[in-house]
Structure formats: structure tokens, C-alpha cells
Image (spheres, rainbow, N blue to C red):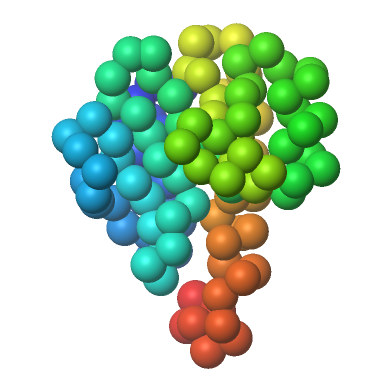
Length: 114
């Protein structure tokens, strides 16, 4: 997947918003004000995604291009290098998981609005 495809996929999520809060080099995707993905726009291209802690470790062991979250809580976030080594279907699946993990932690009233 290229940067634009990932951007479009993230924005397909219900009530997803994008912003540039850190700098012009990272697109941040949020739902209800909570971050579910950070897409680096500078090389090496990467995406930071929220992940179940046990799964995060497993993915890092299985895929060399999955690293602990850069500038994030390394227990709950992975950084995925977009070097072509990960199939697109997995990247989309991990984006979905991140989105749903964030939603699951929202207050019930916010979840019901989705």
C-alpha cells in the first residue's frame, strides 16, 4: 500500500478524522478525539498502530518491519515500516484492529454514536 491508499483507508472508518498536530511530516487519524493511527509522510514511510500487548510482541517477533511504537507506549503501539514486506491485507487488518481497540476504550455514550 502506498501513503495515499493508507490515508484513504483510514478515512473510511466511521467518524475518522485526520490532522497534523505534530508537524507536517505525520498524518494523525483519530476517532472521537482518540488516535488510532499515525502515518509518517517522510522516509522511511511507516504507520504507528495501537495493538493488543501480547499480539504486539508476537508481530514484532514474526515481522522484521514491525517495531515497538516510535515515541508511543511501546507496550500498546507498533510502528510498521511500509517497505513492501507486509501484505496490504495485513496492514488493513492491523488498521482495523487499532481502530476497534480505540473504540472499545471509549465511553459507552461515544461508542453508541458510532
